[in-house]
Length: 302
Image 1 (spheres, helix red, strand yellow):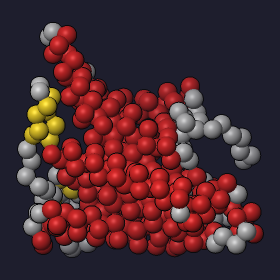
Image 2 (image 1 turned 135 degrees about the horizontal axis):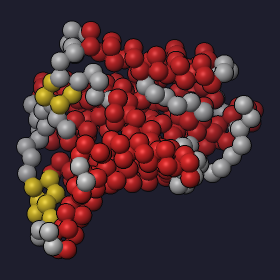
Image 3 (image 1 turned 120 degrees about the vertical axis):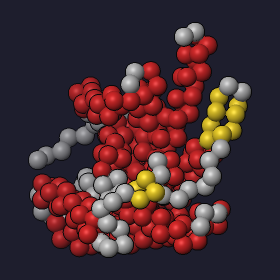
């Protein structure tokens, strides 16, 4: 293999990595926003991705695949998953807000298992994988480099959603309330901010991003099942820790870095080692820089 061939493979895998990393970043944003406000790792977040993929699936099989139906699929998935996220927060996490963190962690794992196994027994979902309808695929050739229309959709939609999130957090009242509660919830409540509403809004926002990530993931890998959210959810958690858990820019950066690392492993080593590399990154970052790339070191009294 010549150096030119190696360079072409590298660029191609870089594009693939940005596409995959964009999905990880969307999911990781939900982890990091929830952790930044209530110091909770919501391990059910990957299963909300699964719910979003199924919500989009039911729209697309009814309306067929067209640009308009794809938009409806995103909107319906976002509505369903936002409601699901708020419901989970209200019923499972809010009663344990003042309990030890271990209780909330165990509850998050239990909610994840409930969503997975609940989906398997629902008659309109079931345990068998389903083929996800998606637009006809074709490649756009940029010289020797090829990028599919699905990858373009994933990158563009992810970028728009992440920019929208940045605007919400930095420019809106709800976003300022989120930052205030994240900094000091008790002081924020004394200033007239409803902490409960702000936390519910954060869950809704994170779940909406997971829903969009679920539809995009199903476009890229068009087979869905009740267990489909487990591995993307874990890798998005790795991305959130890599970028700095609690840091929104860190979650975006961590997702892209993790996606690129995974695709480069597949392109130059073996696809069998991709998952091992992803979780090795988690171990390394915890050993070398526990706060993450953009995280801020802080002391927590346990």
